[in-house]
Image (cartoon, rainbow, N blue to C red):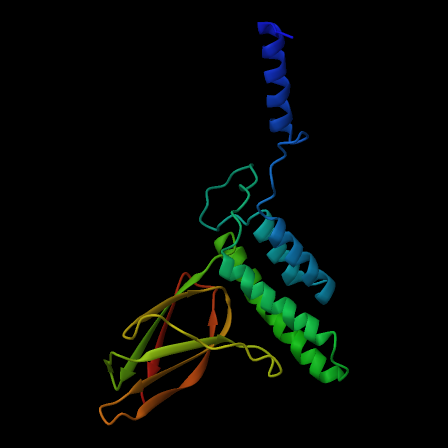
Length: 222
């Protein structure tokens, strides 16, 4: 059967309408589906939680930045959070799953408290900056008042004592060493092998990452 030009035009219009409406076989995927699923699982874990509600609003719909000009329009939907951000939420979910297996009420409370604290930091940062993001962190190692180069910096997510994540080395040496981290609480330390082939260490410090555009950190060498 040979289609006439009007029939071809009608078929093209139907296909276009299906694509635009999302009701046909070309229905677009939801770029925030993975984020939404993780937030839903956190909701099951934490129950009603104001910080989680704030985080959900920011990650799925976006918060208007304080310096934005006034408008009656809703802010545009934010892009999906960076993969590292979603991985940090996965750590919260892993903590939730562990908490569900703990019979000791106090131990379970401590684990869930670490999750709630992480969610609160993420929520406050998201509200301030409009969406999920990674925060630039710069670490300097200082002997007295002078920066000293060549130290290796290590960080790990700080959480309940029952859940100790693997430590990660910042790729470049001080000073400064630079890394971008999702909002949260981290333990950061440094070490260096000296001329005598002995390892000098700087004890770990606990740092809140987020709530500011960037985080500068100085580690004093003992």
